[in-house]
Image 1: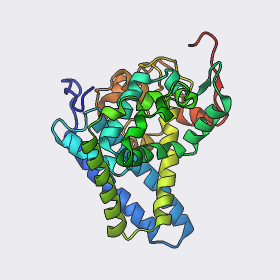
Image 2: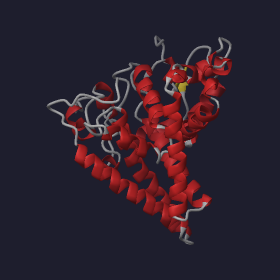
Image 3: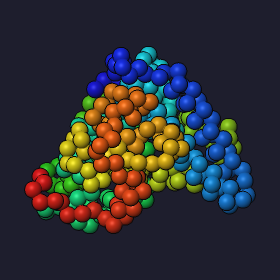
Length: 308
């Protein structure tokens, strides 16, 4: 899939609305970062960090639209995509590469994190699983950017791609980074440098401190990381249909821009967020986010018999 998607006549891209939401969400995120950094009240700091975790997920949802080419019909799609990615923080080109790869690999062995298959290392699987639940998964995009900036050749090294690198095969790392070396290095590095400059500008302009920044991004990491797999856990092992349309309260649904309608998204990746509810089959199972999320804390399950 390219960075720009053709606009379906029945599902027009809400470009102006997306721009407005991006500006409002960015302003809210900046305001919450400032609040957490400039209050001495612990409760205010904690509530501010939680609020930031939701607003930054709005920004991520808009980034997700840009990745699929449905944020805006013009070149603003890429320009805003790069700016929105800087809030994560990550490179837009890298995020697009990894996410579109996810659509191809969804529920395959490389991304079947919820099941322990025959011959798989159960300890490694559980470490990976609880890394998702505790937010450590969020570290992978920024670390990938750092690695691409200083040593891009590492992605095609034996550490990841050797036949005996069983950890990389089981964890899905080998499949996920396959092809990263073919991305335009100059463009990706410029995006990464922009991310660094943007985060530094936020730090200086808002007079932030590391404790406030880390608290806000730790809350975002847990919130974001949990949803990234709750909308897939225990779903059918099918690349297109292996996701859930999760039930969640209306406020959260709007903050995440219908991201919980994830099965509808995987079946219709070119449909803008505002139209996704029309593509949800109301007769299919729609488990609650909370039920799936709580069940995940029990750990990965044995792979069902007959699954490959």
